Amino acid sequence: MHSIVTELMKDHAYTLVKEKEVGELGEDHYIIFSKEFNRRIGSLLLVDGQFRYVAFEYSAVTREEQPIEMMIGRAKALVDTLWPEQASSLYGPTVVPAATTYELQFDRRSVEGIDLPNSGLRFVFWKDGMLQSIRSFLYPIRFAYVPVTITAEEAKAIYVASVEPKLQYDYFDAKTYVGGNNEWTLVQHVLWSQPLEVGLDGTVTTYETLGIEEGTYESLPLVPEPISKPEWLSELSERGTMERQVGESLTYRWTRDGEWIGEMTVNERGKIRAFHGTDIEKQSLSAVWTEEEAYAEAVRYIVGFFGTIEGTIQRERVAVVEEEHYTFTFHRFMNGYFVNHSTIHCTISRRSGRLLSLRCDDGLYVDLPNDSSIQWTNRKVKDSLNEQINCTLRYVLDEIDERGYAVYVKQYDVGYGKKEMNLHAYDALTGQPWVVDLSDDDRTPYSFTFHSKRTSER
Image (cartoon, rainbow, N blue to C red):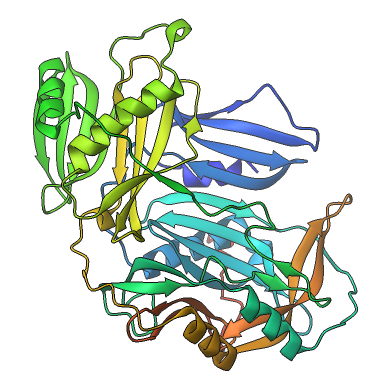
């Protein structure tokens, strides 16, 4: 199955380095090491010799957003090339957009023609078209019987009662949403609190029951001496030589003695989109910065760089701690409401306390409507849900059993409008629903072609 990496890396020199520790379930973990860049650029997971996951790492994402059709075409081509025997049984893709990525899911169906979620291949692309990861769910399948104890109407009532709308600002682009207007709006967001499944016995599966908690945020502490952007840029220029590169994005690059030490891309308004740097001096990890010290330094950068943005920056409480750095996540709030697509990831070195990277969503800088009047209350949201949603039976993945089979059981699928329309939010002023249409009634196994070796002519 290393041929998968060979295909994905066919234009680059690489090596696979097997990690020493092997999991108890027959997992083999590999590091994908680029000879061209002399660093780790990805990882590969095999289970009992079967491909399960590959992911790639990029130092910066600077290209312009690409059309989703390009990513769908590339994913289909990879399926045809790497999984030709399974391609004829895969349907899709179902496209799930996120702030910075598109998820493309190809799945199989039961003999009754019912979709089997998480039964095929999942591709994740950055919106600039770069492949982030591929995950395989191509397990053998068996079906478990579950008795039906509640009706579809009872399942709908349970579903509506579970939804807890949350006010936030969001962006609805015309390419993703039905009736999308490419504008920012204050909405009653319902996607997070909607039950993922309603069992045939009335049990509800939510993100919370799966152990996935919604982010919690806290205000930033007072900072007596924030680090201003001009001060920081001056320090970088003192450490190395700056070059200005104009391409798809405006990029500033710093080098010292011919070696790269930092790179920053900015948007059309001159605002930071991303920065990636390195420690020049390799201090010993025996005297590392604590998480509290690194967080205080991160706040100095955040307040100094973004303090003038209308609204408030708050910290997500969970930090990511790695061997050589800390990553802190910050979000923008407006009138006390969360602003989607406005995240800042700030990475601080444990060796030196220096800023190693910033990744900023474009929503951080947009001018938001300041009208916070709310006409669409929680009660109206629930009334609308009760009128619009419908319940049908579908299969869900219950477990991967000890024999390696994917076990599917039936659950109630609660959909908005069409069977595969995914409701995200209601406009807080007008009540307009914002939905993603995932349906395609004419979906068939997409075609693929075997390219046999051509025999020599005599």
